[in-house]
Length: 287
Image (tube, rainbow, N blue to C red; front, top):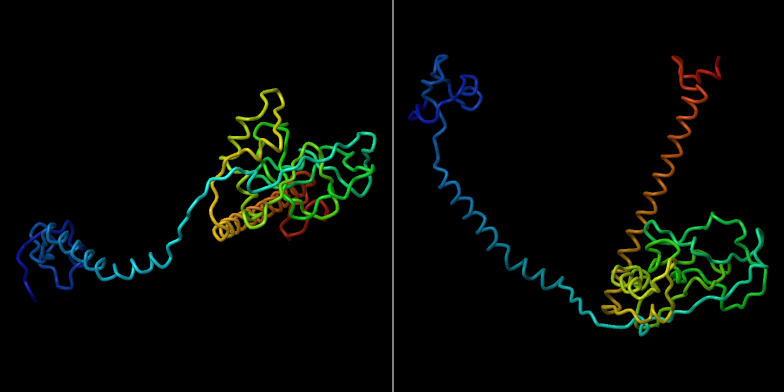
């Protein structure tokens, strides 16, 4: 048995037995315990820790520097007017006499813009959304076309963007602007998020006509100042943001399904009283 010089005393005999591999000699009197872990000065522990840390850093520093240089991405931004990068056009004026509750072509409205996070949504607030009058081919939108509102019917609507989900179904109306990217200058996915950024929104809001319902125009949209990187970085940024939006859409769909299931379960159990009985059968239906 090794007897240590008396150092830090234990509070209880049980701790002596738990923390030491030797037999305690305190005989039920913790204040006289002669077996204790040697007390190492705190300053020694700190010095040892920092020396160990410094050694680790110097060991891996060359590799870290190499990886940082290898993975370094230069984000050089150039200043543009949106008009240098995109074409913005207003839609056609649609006569109300051709509005219908049935048909094949649907006229776009401000209700097609999702205020909760942006994107396209079907307008369920109106029933006469179909248009049966003559329409030029250039005003029939294609899948993936980017649109943005020209009228702020609700606060914060200006600068919202959406993508057309289906070709040959929607008509480009006068309250909506169509954004066409100039090839070789800007990527559509990046453009979609650029126009809906705070940078562009603030400029559109400042330039909008100060009336109860504010308006903008294709020229004012093209006059917005932006800073844009090269095409490769645009593709990466657009892809990342698109993936995030897709994940958000999936999560929303899951939440909607869970909410519908909860409502149905509540209706069965607490309205129709068809909760499971002791045998696991519907209480009301099984009598």
